[in-house]
Length: 207
Image 1 (tube, rainbow, N blue to C red):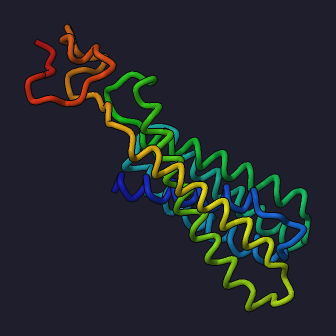
Image 2 (image 1 turned 120 degrees about the horizontal axis):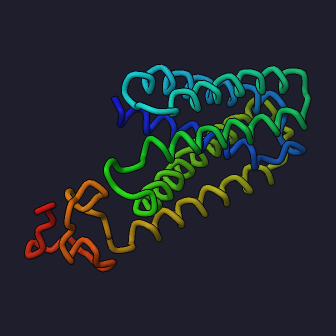
């Protein structure tokens, strides 16, 4: 279930971030309202599951994002553009924090978890921006007079996210093996090396 919580937080963060950078001057308020309801659903399920599966404030962050998304959908229903955009950003920030916490590796220093957190945020943007661009393309059925510039801009953002994800995936892995976290009594030299590659000749343990 923790894997599902991770996915829901990433997806919700990506969707909320995509809404936060969508040009409100080119896209009708109805699009924001409907997609904030999608964020509401993702955050609600994540909060429900995280309360039992992911200890810590993850479920509170997801629940807060759900409340913010619900209020934001009401703001967009009333065509309160400034308030609606602000609430999109708040929901994105809450889900980004939840994503970082739920994706953090257990038993490793905070600094060592930075690459995992960055990868989780980028992957969330890839999914969120891609789905957002698809939904925006379908919205032209409801608003055929909408400028195509909005769709082109969101496709550019999605391609940029894909590019960042590809660059991070092509970098060599420097993961920390078990026994090398703060609980290890005497980490061997291979654990202290910044260039560890997981060689079979290097066995990391607390002995």
